[in-house]
Length: 440
Image (cartoon, rainbow, N blue to C red; front, side):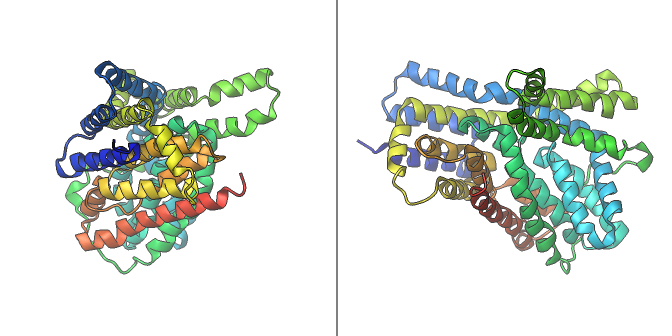
């Protein structure tokens, strides 16, 4: 009989084959691999069907609202010009001499509420506009901002991958956000301004035809205070709850109120409602236009939800087939920290598959049984897996081509800029997790 661990490894290889070589849809690939794994362990048809239903339901049950509201908030921030206001104001505040730091900070603020691709498409025209006005090299300006977007995408809720991994590992969303911010700051400094400074001599001509987002006139932008408030409201609500709730009497009115507004679903709902009013209705938009924008945002995030659902089925089959116990027993004696092991597994899968989301969820399936018997902070494990899932983006990752085409780079230049930047983010993220474990 084939070892359960070997079956999982073969399943992962099949997943890579289906996604990378056959180019099959990722959701379908996960379902096929999950059914094949279930059959190989002797599960019956009804049991397989139940695993599929349970896996999708358990995974998406909490995430639909958080990811949906997150997409809506990001869309409102983008469409209203709030992202442009934040970037422009940061550049003016910091000045030319510290412009890289301004771009990095603006990228982090914009990156918290916005999904990576949407954020990228919004900020690239702003990078180009800043380059024209300051006559500074575009990569010198762009790398700090893009590195911040990527770091937020991999480390910080309410982004899909860290949010979904939090749910699977039972990690606290607020703590993960706080720890993620602590690690994100030095990571962005190294991968952004410091690495970006080495690219000052790389002159490029961007592909203007790809820029379908045009900067708005300044008189049409929302105020800086409103822009920051709406973009960072989820961060405020989740962070305040995590910090205040332990200090309040358990049954007090204040504790109950803080617990309500700090629930991830309620926090995202409040954030979206505030953004709809402050960035939409109050500025003259009709309710129909605001709702249309939200509807479009939810459609954009639907493919990501399907990938997460498929990964949830894979995890559920591993549980139902009792493979998790065998994996936990086999990995228990390894002389490697679960934090390092999670990073390594996620990094390998990321390099093979190209998708950070797939890498993160597949790693969770392998590590879940291991952490149940060890004293490891699940929040730190979320971050180590997130860091590994960003490792060395190359030609099988859509982000690689997005960066290449918008900045009009050669393949070699893209490896030397984008791929190196992602690797720095990944390695620094792991280093931050390993350092932070001694203080939490």
